[in-house]
Amino acid sequence: MEKTVNNKLSGLLEEIGIETKKKIYWEETIDSSVVVKTHPNKRNIPVNEAKILLVEDQPSNRKTIEVYLKQKIATVDIAENGKQAVELFQKKQYDIVLMDLQMPIMGGIEASLRIRKIEEDRDFSVPIIAFTANFYSDDKEISIEVGMDAYLSKPFECKTLYKLIQEYI
Image 1: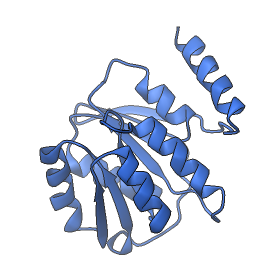
Image 2: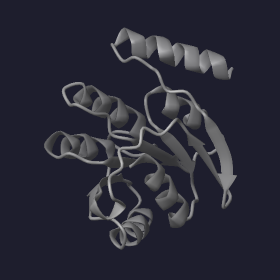
Image 3: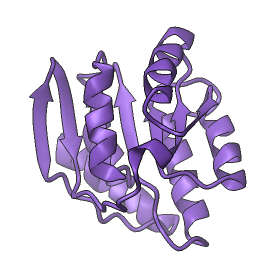
């Protein structure tokens, strides 16, 4: 079943002109969270100078992550759904995007696809880290297939997310 889902998704992405290149290279469990990564395309940006776009619809999750990251990161902009994320991404440049997958208005998968389309006019691809509480779905494979760089299952500890951010910026 998994291959069928990925083959169908890959075919649809090719139809709309999005090439899929990402392959999972590492999967592990850290602090009870599943972490899936692609090969990091590290840009060597000092973490304390990084500009992050946090996309999360749940106020308590959003505030917890925001408060934690603002102690370590220069800029943390917030979007409450994928539509807001795409709008912010069009206006500003970010070093990394933290994307919840299950959101109202526009989910993380669609928002990430739109972000990857916007990047076609830019010189570089911004790492996107997906996260979701929907642990038993195909979300981790689909996230990587559509061009996200890493996947983290909820609940996760902020320090786990921070370590993952450090690997990609």
